[in-house]
Image (cartoon, rainbow, N blue to C red):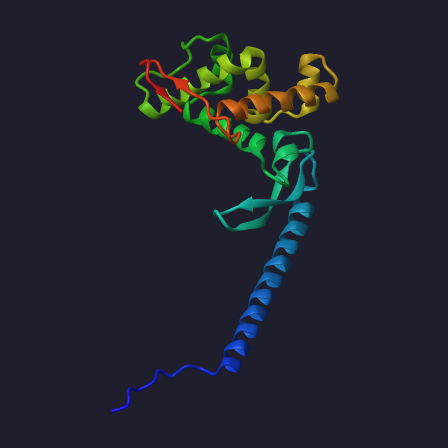
Length: 211
């Protein structure tokens, strides 16, 4: 008795179907681009850039293998404008993670001066283990980059000040402060282990060590 062969479409039919599937994918992509363009136009008309912000097409990594473009509003001279628009390298990820740690630690603008002075009177009581870990990490960050470097990084990555605003605050030129901020970000990226091949050993209060 002959075994029944599975019904398989001819090779030509398979290739034709793949062509149409690719065309449908291109059509869907074109529709998304048109919708994105209309969205940008509406944003520009409604906003007008009165606060100095601009719209930028930013490549966002959404998975290990896939990236996509999204329209983001950012202000020229800010951390996001310089490091987040195109290739998001170690500096961008380090600055972004610093802001996340700051948020996890429950810090506010009012308590930032206490943090920089190394006192904990501004911290809320009865805090969670996650918040304690974030505060410990921030204390290690301040010890690594120094109080002045920590203040610059908080202004730049957390509070969103532009290079021009930080330059005026520090009585420095914009080009000079840009170099200083870039070096601070490199130190921050190294401390937070965003630099490949430069894993650090972090000491905890208990005396244990982790890499």
